Amino acid sequence: MWDEFNIKTFDAETVVYRDGVYCPELSTIVGTDFDKNYDRPIHIIYVGDIAGNYRLNVNIFVENQPVFLSAKIKNKKPAFLNIFIKNAGKNSEFRGHVIIHNENDIKFNCTALHTAPDTTILLKTKLIAGRNSVSKLTGTAEIEKNCNDVNSDISFCALADKTARIEFMPAQRISAVPTSAEHSASIYQPTVQQIEYLRGSGLSGAEVDSAMQDAFVNDLDLF
Image 1 (cartoon, one colour):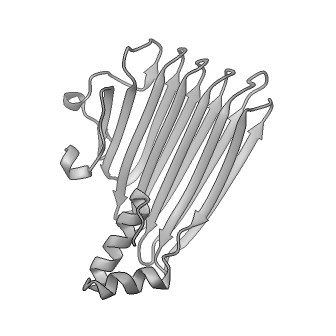
Image 2 (cartoon, rainbow, N blue to C red):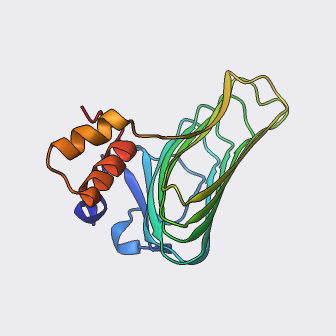
């Protein structure tokens, strides 16, 4: 499975979902409501093809617990994925990377809710939008009263075919003084020089597209 989806793993407790379904045989713990501390970080792995409606709730109720999310999903049919993160554990942090390869119509919503001070929620989403695809990405960061000194960041970035339609909808509801609270959305545009360099290396059009996607996903320099 790790080779198939190229997910980097590390020494951690794991919660694995494949095609939107929990996989007990690949997981070391059950569920994503974390109400006890683990000696190791928690790694949620969410991979595969989805079609229809899916929801992933992550609730952190304990202090000093690091939680990581690695998600790589594809859809060839209309799909909706809702990720809800609640951090109620002082000095606990959530760090997530979501990669979406949309070939049809997808709606993605993420909510980051801070209900305790000194909490962290950082979620980075990258979208590869295929030909004639429609993508709507919504992100909301909520910091409740008396939840000072939190770190919150929800970011979207897309690599899109010229025929793709993309809508970003970021929002913040802040009722306390954070250490940092950021929100961003951007479109990645390969340069003419990058494309010419790859073509000059003998790559076909499809291979150039594949190289561009790899560089986008992995933050690689094409030169």
